[in-house]
Image (cartoon, rainbow, N blue to C red; front, side):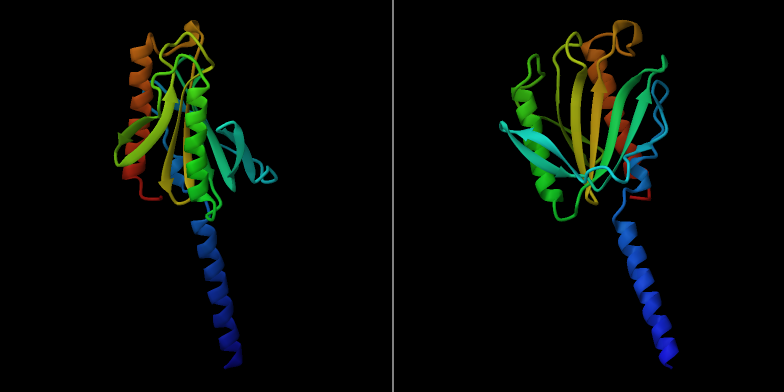
Length: 201
């Protein structure tokens, strides 16, 4: 009888640990979007296990820590083999997720106010397939290495970053500012559509 109780107790512990691990990881849906006819996903790159569990961002001329328990990067290359989109998916410490969210929004506001040639004075707010996305973007394609920086907070302690790279004219997949914005919004629309219809999230 005692043996059966011990076995049952061990099973409960194993199941509990397994369940905890499952809820404390980046879900495959955030990493499985393969791209489109004009952009193709490279293989996801995971951050090293021994990487720092936080990074610092600038907020209102000060510094704030963003927790990073795990993370991946996926580059989406155009037909010329050059990355137009740098997608990052990171997992926050559950206890810090709300604070990380607030600090990242403040960071975007700071970057927008401290940069030239920006599309808007405040944050850009977009809504695709039930997901709210916040960001900043340039008002021309002639300046800066990054044209747009956007962030999404879908829950599950997960943060999704979209970085839209500026490219030299010979490597671009966009012809002008309007074309860039169309492709920018199209990517986020397609990515969130994938999330909406994906079951593992």
